[in-house]
Amino acid sequence: MGNEQSGSTSGDTSLWLNPGLSSSGDAFVNITISDVLAANDRLDRFAGLLVRLFPELASQAGKIESELLPLPFIPGVDESTGPHGRYWVKADHALPIAGSVKARGGVHEVLEFTERLAREHGLLQGDDCTVLADPAARAIFARHEVAVGSTGNLGLSIGLMAAALGFRATVHMSADAKQWKKDRLRDNGVRVVEYTGDYARAVAAGREKAAADPWCYFVDDEQSTSLFAGYAVAAFRLQDQLEALGIQVDAEHPLFVYLPCGVGGAPAGITWGLKYLYGPSVHCFFIEPQASSCFQVRMQHPHSPGITVYEVGLDNKTEADGLAVPVASELAFREMRHRLSGIVTTSDEAMFRDLHWLNEQHGMRVEPSAASAFSAPPLLVHSETGRGYLQAQELSGRMADANHIIWTTGGSFVPDVEFSRFLHRGRDARQP
Ligand SMILES: *Cc1c(COP(=O)(O)O)cnc(C)c1O
Image 1 (spheres, helix red, strand yellow):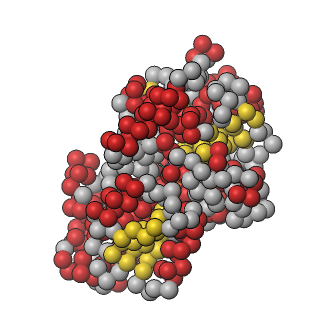
Image 2 (image 1 turned 120 degrees about the horizontal axis):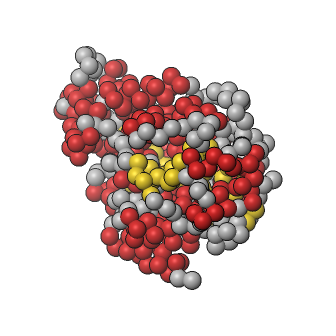
Image 3 (image 1 turned 180 degrees about the horizontal axis):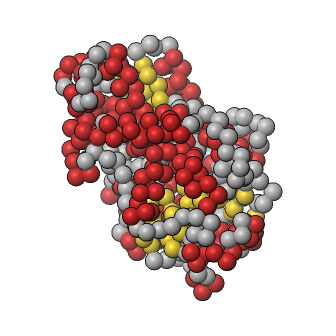
């Protein structure tokens, strides 16, 4: 398969192309457009409640959305060989509530559960959802528990949202989870259960405990269609932003989107939405740490559901805690088999280098996971595999009119001490 080392960056990144990509095979397996539109409507309907619970959302009228910011150039792309198009950052690292891409999906699933409970208890009579922050509603929610397994960011999204509504919130956390994320959850009244094992084990433990407790609702990152639909809403919001900026997306104006991938739910949700909107004119690539490339491993073994990175000799050890996942989501895998263009794997060093660059050049604060997507564009435009893709898609002559979106998925809440450690490592990685 199209697996190669790039000769054009520092030699520690590689691009794999998905042989299953097809422009016609858009059979909707589990997710339908009505799921996604319902998620979009739900987030709109509950905007008033969100403002009541999180006053910082007032300026955005309760909409959890990030900016699309221009970048004049990015490291590793040699413009003298171009033009290769324009670059943008989709700044989900600054998303309110969770400080990561997990905000839309996580908030959506908690709201969907909340709405169901509220209707069962007759709490929602008219259209006013803000009553769900009243003491009567909170007293009912307090009887229920909302739980999730997380390496950190999903826990922040679900835990903070559930606790704000008055639920008992529990986050089952893997060994990779950063201390500050646990502290932030506990400071907000969320119970954190720590595991010595990896992410898949923390999820399994949480799922098992929840199954035995009828008062516990478990958000299942590996299987949830509600999370997936919430993530997919981002595509429709991005479409509005592109239109507002006058950016065209069609056969003559290809759009490339680079998305950091853990279990695959968030990037697959976004890809699903974008493929729905733009079909073959959008080209989505996932980025994974080399040691935790569970999605690539799953895509390369289409007949081995549940295959782990350990089975192919990888150790799942990476500083990109948001992506330290040994097994891909089967839901995400099924939805991506024919929609995903390819996967880039990258090293921790490259992430720290790009994190440092982004902070120095643009003052943005992202965590290592979120800097990973910067490894992708240089491979697409410079490597043999990448150029082969552009040729096969008949895009080689159209790149001047291309747009590249690098999705920075988390980091604005990283504490100063931690972030300066990241910067130190990044500076070291940038020394020749
Ligand atoms: C969770 C996460 C991702 C990827 O989402 P998955 O649904 O796990 O694939 C990417 N970046 C960051 C910072 C994350 O926290």
